[in-house]
Image 1 (spheres, rainbow, N blue to C red):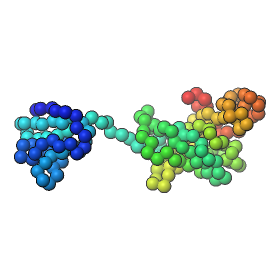
Image 2: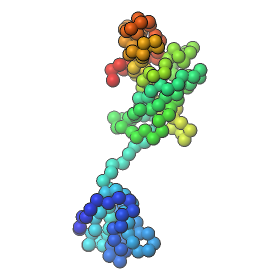
Image 3: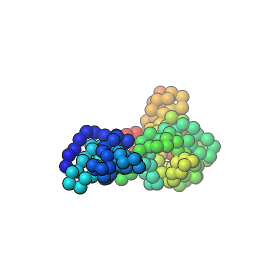
Image 4: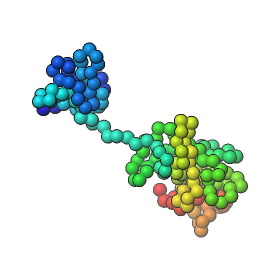
Length: 188
């Protein structure tokens, strides 16, 4: 077996008369064998096979049940729009392919939410769970105690709010503010 250079998709490997297409390789119909992956080319003279040993690891994309960290971009009357910054499921990081998500008012808390601005404000950083991923967007929820705002900023001062006895206080103005606070508030 002979290992050669690093190859990319579409790199010429051999002619079909010498080596047949093996794993991660293909024949184009004219007798030429090409790579279909990024990796290291391998020519096996015993089996007469040209293959590519992949150099990339498989990626996992966003899926139902994953936990995301997101930045609140817009607060509307019935939903909150967020920009997803990172995601993980079972301790494994996921690739964020669609950065836009939404939290509907009925997915914010198990308690009655009178006004979404009492739960989230623009610029807050939230921890949420993915309910559904569609081609139209990502639906999130923050009902569990560990989900919700993990870092909030004062409406007037824009300084990080301090959690004191379950309530948020602006360190500059002293004003108390409401949020749907995560049990992990300011621990990240």
